Image (cartoon, one colour):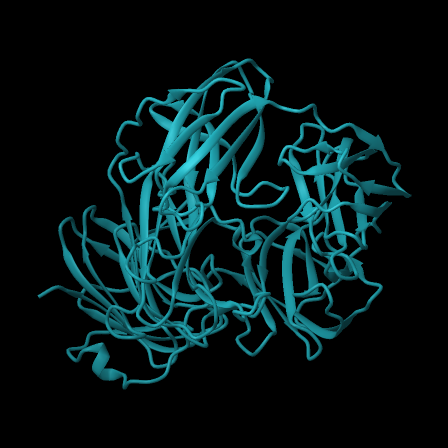
Length: 623
């Protein structure tokens, strides 16, 4: 909706009475050095979970960091057990956190994560409950840490000569907040293989041995660069074991540490020649084999007894491997020719603890499947089957502005996560906004959008419609061409009827303008501009001077207000200052001292996707 601008002398807060607001479900930007006061409640995102804790509730914030930048985030709450995670942007759903912490702040159940950015880019900070959906008020802060102190000189260790040591309070602490460590150095030739084990020992006054973690890396510019690590050996137990292959000749550093940042105790560190790589038995695609895990099997790089099977595949070929065993908990892992793990599965099979792995191979060449048990050294018979998975179906044309009906059947195509899905295609224009709504009374819906060809999701949505488990995905098309939508259940066992509606909202609206000393009243609608996180906004251009001190407020009774001030740079939004709830629980205020005068854009937006309604935006000089 086109906003109206006028001069007022009454505060915007007085114009709007207190009212309810929707809470956050997406990731607004959090500036380094900022603190956010918020609350996790029924309107925030939740994760179903698999254990007795019933999942968790969370709120995401994005931040930008430079390569090597040292950051610290803290999450405090009197209402719930706080838990923090850091993800590379776009990897949140994969669950592969770059850093995470439960009680690292050392103040009851509050969390602290220390994080060194591996590269320039955007990251996601997830503030969540450790378990359960009860939520409550919290304080989240993000700050930059000072440069790291120089690492101490490591002690030499030799092959075949175990070292007895102990972690203690006087040991150095790792830069990434992983706790105290002892350092050892050894020299290696290129491609030389080593077996490294770290065993914790019970000592005087210790009820239990600590949980050890072994890390291997190199020192670069006085900083430890980790190349490999292990917490719990694949063969079971808490002790650590890994096989390490030196990528080049030179000195390498082993860090003996504990999983708990403040744990200590005695340990034995052993450096040995690695056992030979597993010998792989050929298996053809379309074949199955009867095998048996036994005490005479070889040891894999994680220290577990395993059998290996090799096969050759074409680029883009989809394979499905199933591992069935009654005597042990089956585990499958897929490797490429260089030994890099591509995929793994524990209990994805149809029954009990059997495994099922579906993967689309990116390149032609040789691959290896490893068969082992999970968690212990169990042995016994098994059946391994390797088949070519059904090719991805040709997508059906999806018209704009029409509701289409579909059904996910038990015979539907399966994605790499085992979900049945239907594929739909449409043609879009660069810069246009599209909205897809998926509804179902039979299952929890999940939407993904990607380019035509080999499918790689560009954006996805689970419950964005805000009406139970239905989905709404808002996305700005990066280029003109064909796109593919995957409509699926969130879980691999979902099936049933659904409806799908695709809307083309056209290009982003042009910003209006506002003067310092003015108030704009407007209404967010589904037709307004959308931010990268899918939230609606109205944009206002404003000119400001160097050193000018401004107070900007955004008030709404209809949605959780969020202010974002910045500039468009080559199509990318660069936020300068932002705020969520500084004026009150759901009203935003920014106190901004301008460092670099000129033209800026104020985004009056909702905190979460799908929130709309009336608002008042005021730009005033600070008193």
